[in-house]
Amino acid sequence: MMRVRPEDFGAIVALDDPPALIHVDHALLAWLGHAPSPYADAPLGHLSAPTEVHLMVTNRCPAACPGCYTGATPDGDEPSEAALLDTVDRLADQGVFHLALGGGESLLHPALFRVAARARARGLVPNLTTSGLGLTPALAEACRVFGQVNVSLDGLDAAYRASRGYDGADTALRALRRLHAAGVPCGVNYVLSQATWAGLEATTAEVAAAGGQQIELLRYKPAGRGRDGYTDRALTEAQARALTPRLIALAAAHPSLEIKIDCSLVPFLCAADPTPALLSQLGVYGCEAANALASVDARGQATPCSFVDVPIGDAATLGAQWATHPTLQRWRHYARDEAPAPCSGCAYRAVCKGGCKVVSRQIDGDWFAPDPECPRVLAHRRGEAYVPVSPGAWPVSP
Ligand code: SF4
Ligand code: SF4
Image 1 (cartoon, protein in one colour):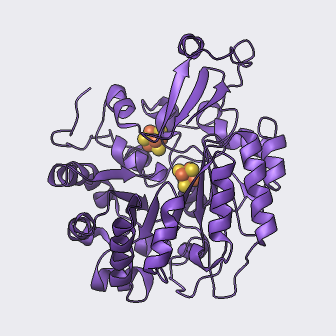
Image 2 (cartoon, rainbow, N blue to C red):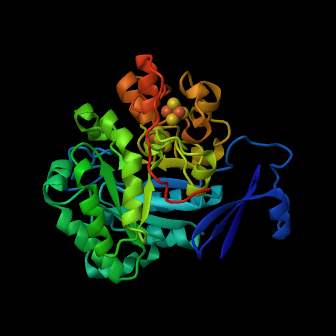
């Protein structure tokens, strides 16, 4: 199946097999036999809708991880099935491609699989994030409805305990093995913090052995309970500078594993001076809040991204006011319109977009400020010339 969504540059084409979102220009759109984009003569300057929306199906979770970015609790908010189905319909009407279902612990919602089935019926690809708690072999089979399932795993043994406050690594790895056995595309979300920094290689080896196809690295973010004691947990400047050489070595050691970084880690990747062509080849994008990304939380509130507690209305507002809502406009155009130095003169501004605004809010008290943990920003604030990281040999060359 192929879905085509008109954009001002042409269109986004969504393929099921292989799963991909492909940006095509106007000429290729015509060659594919589609009508011209209605935005060709009146460019929007942004995407016509998010490509991916994070939908929090519940904010209930028994685990009470100290750094939980949603602040989930055993009796947290949980939308009704009807509310979730209505949100799915509204996002489908808007032309969203991917629905990232998460929590809380998503598997606790009794309607999770019906919500995923509705998403499929409306042409969206539902993906799931879970801690793996309660993922029985039968549930693993049911997970075939998802495009991909990622299990949260922030290290092994003591590292997992230090990060999440309980012993869950074995449960997570068992869930990964069950998903793999059921033929579900699966991987791991690994949150990089001071506690989990050392265990990356050992955990990656376990993920590969358990049949995981991807390890997605996420920066520890100051949201929800993660705001408390943030600076004791966030990566240090030395760790931020060491990340890219480490990723390159990890990719070389596990050529069959997809190693992915989240939007907020892009300033750390750019610390090693990749060429624009290489970034494009690697499919890197930075802060896409209110452009490629948006979120709907467990209260039904839409926000620019899932780590941002700035509600703009509900899913209906997201669709109706996508182009005009002043909050969405400011979030998506911050880097272009108002980012100060050093981001304003940075070669990576168009991709990185000034780094992670969640971190800027935590450290500087302002969402709209250069990422205060970016090595370039730190050098600028010290009045030093920036000295790029030496990355070693990049795994691909443009
Ligand atoms: S603020 Fe931007 S970089 Fe940070 S998590 Fe949200 S989308 Fe990603
Ligand atoms: S200086 Fe700004 S735009 Fe450049 S990499 Fe750092 S955060 Fe991103």
